[in-house]
Amino acid sequence: MYGIFASFRRGSQLENITLHARDLSSKISPSIARILKDAKRTNNGRKHPKISTLQLARTKRKFIQQGKEWPQEPLPPLNLKPYRKGHKWEEAKAARKVTIAENMAKMPQMIAEYREQVRERREKYRNRKDAAKKDPNQPEYVQYLLAKGVRLADIAVKLGTQNKKAKI
Image (cartoon, rainbow, N blue to C red):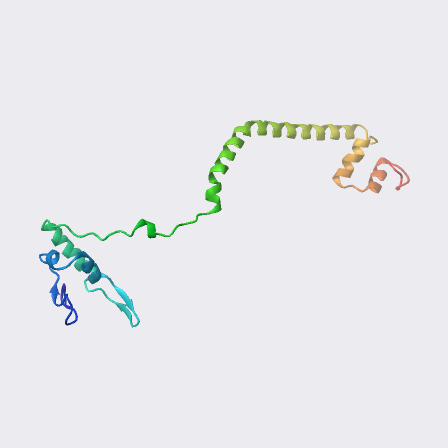
């Protein structure tokens, strides 16, 4: 193969056709032009295309400069493309957005409730702590120490009872 000349097997319909821009439209149909430039795999390895990409681009440019229309390759039919099933999250996306919008509308109320609960919990803790400081014999103080993980026997010693097994 020299330059952009391509010779074919003897006896074939396309024997010794030169691929110049001036005679491409008259001698070769678009389907044959596509076959000429396609590369193919064989058992012995790769069969290189008859016309390189650079040569095809030059030929196409010359062809268009002469005012002729270059044959476009047809697109594959849409119905032959595989159908994609999709994912579960794609189906649930719309319902999830609705749920998020509803919950975001409730968010100020939920935040206010949470802050109120935290205030109550802190206040309860402060009251229990203050009561325990005032009188160590109060049952709140005992509950406070038990909550901290102090053993009952140690609490009895702290309260000053002589019998460590005494019920409090």
